[in-house]
Each structure stands twice: as C-alpha cells, then as structure tokens.
Image 1 (cartoon, one colour):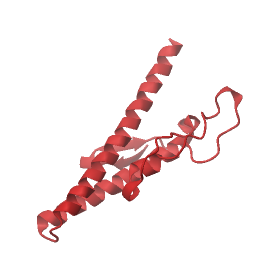
Image 2 (cartoon, rainbow, N blue to C red):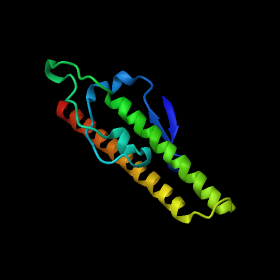
Image 3 (tube, one colour):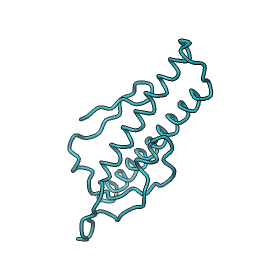
Image 4 (cartoon, rainbow, N blue to C red):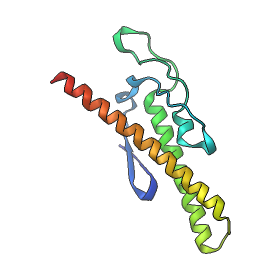
Length: 132
C-alpha cells in the first residue's frame, strides 16, 4: 500500500495495484477546480461505466488515477494550509484572510475525498450483499 498523509497527519492509503480499482470508469463529480483542489482532480464528465457487460474499454484516466490525483491535491492543499497557519503563528506574515482561505480549501477538498471514499465503500458493500 502507498501511504499519503492527509489532514491532521491521518494516513490515507491506496492499493499499490491500480488494476484492483480500474473497472470503475469515470467519476463525473464535476465542479470548479479552484486552486488545484480535489474537485478538479475528480471533476469532468463520466466517460462510461467501465467494461461491464462486454462493452469496449473506456479510454482516459481510470478511477484509481482520479482518486490518486485527488488524494495528492488534497494533501498539497493541507500542506499549504499548515504552512500558512505556521507562518501566521510565527509572525512571518500577517495574512489572516489568505490563511483562512487556504484552510477552508483544504477542508473542502478533504470532505470531498472522504465523501467519495464513503460512497465507494457503500457501493462495494451493496454489491457484496447482492451475492449473498
């Protein structure tokens, strides 16, 4: 597993084998990609439903690639917010407004990634209940 550390130092893990999640196709969350946030990494139109039912494979980035990009951009936003907060506390700058914006961007990105993760886990559980 590849560990990426998110807000407050919590580990966010992704499987090292991207093929385990490649069949999900596009995500289609959409939305603005303000400041390189997770919405931009996850955004875009859904490009299909993967290769279910013998359909042709979907071109473009896989779901795993999009999630990995979202995790990385969320981590980058959190690092930037932490640096801004540290600079404000240490007196290196006095930009309270910019610091609060950076912290809110990181918070929104983290909530988006967490929401997507929760939906994927719930979908997985539902599929597993179908087989029982």
